[in-house]
Length: 198
Image (cartoon, rainbow, N blue to C red):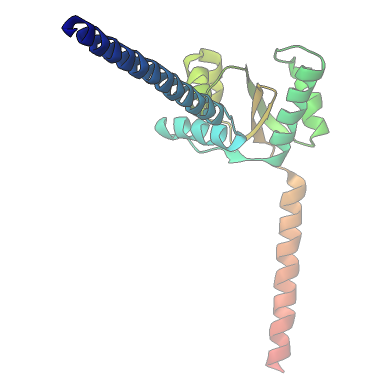
């Protein structure tokens, strides 16, 4: 009888332990699934590249090198967008010849003394990682740290990234317009003062 009671107690303990182990495994699986979902979500959030972030990290590298910061220019953003679309539509990934690059600049109505680009494709977690990768490449680094560049534009589409650098021509037309506007202002201001002198 004692052996039978011991056997029953042993079986009850075994069943309880087995139940707890199964419950623990199920709970462990739920925890692991929840953790993996959070990791997937955070990776997706981190994997978002942004034009603004790429410009900011590029300027941080220039600031470290004590260079002028690049100003965003709509025309350069447009050139970058045209380049991204061209690569995606024609299914290639490469730099253009200088002549072809100049034609795209003309489409964006950008008059330049100097023009360059960095391109990248896929697999970067964030803006910082992308710019760090460019900094490890001598030719990309040279573009980022080129002291002559003054402006920047960036475009991203389907994991293809184009960063365009430029130095605009000093347009004599705008200088003339400024000069004429300055003369007109002085004449009008002098006319304005003569009214009060009466």
